[in-house]
Image: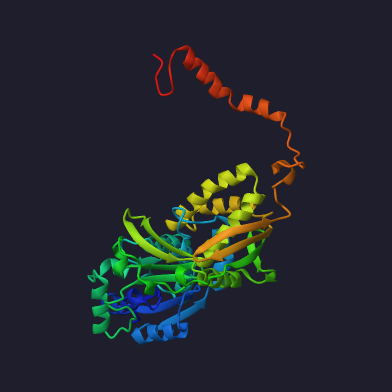
Length: 410
């Protein structure tokens, strides 16, 4: 009798490697592993595929998702200048819906009854995977082995892997959990769970220490077309290539590290460390261009929406109707966002030092205080009279009744 099939989101790390064996032994399922190339560090995804097959998967798909990731996901993230809690540029939250889409597609192709992931029961990714899968195909059943099994620590998982001949790279001495893609790298667990402990230097791979960065600054000019980077220092290239190059430029100058206390969806505060050199640099440049090109009220409203968009995506609502509607608004703000922004990197910093655009709303004649000034000063008094009218009426009323701010008139 043929076994039911389960499609597993597989990274080759500790959790998903143990998941293959566990799904076979505890659920009696044939496991089909799916490895998504989203720009993560690896020594060859074919080796990851071989590992999945050696562990017991009946099939392993290796899919290069980088171009789709850049064009369909990271363009939207940049349009929103997305930074959860104004710090974290949504590294993992952006790749989960993309991977979920391929999981559903392969489940349909293989006739699989289940989709499984290796997320923990108190993390964010379990929500992102499951809400995305439910949005794409509500009929598929979802399995979450890490929520079910009795392996409560990473040390116990490592022992299980060793006992079942499951090859893993994590060790009890270096038990970090790492997730990375084009947009950055997330590191947690181990000594990082102590918020007072300084991050060990060995957790970083995308960035050098600011102390070891070059002594001379590096300047870069980024050209945007419709809000999307299209050239570096005048050399045209794809958005995917620009992200990869900016990761190198910013990271080699010690820029892009984040060490934060993050408020997870389930209500837990978690200490998280990130590297996102390219993402943070591109967001800084993009914001600088928007400051110049977007009308004041649009810009101010957009700032509020950016936080809502980041929270929505962080919470796994990529495919929600609200997020789709937000994307439509954000897209309209990018239509005339063409121009060039100059960044200077130095010893862990990234500074905007110049910006220019044919769609700039910066008017030198209005802004200057020299002889070229075209601003009509005569309009200032009437403007102030009207702007302050409500406050002036309030102050006069309170003064007549002998009251000051904060007191109640009886």
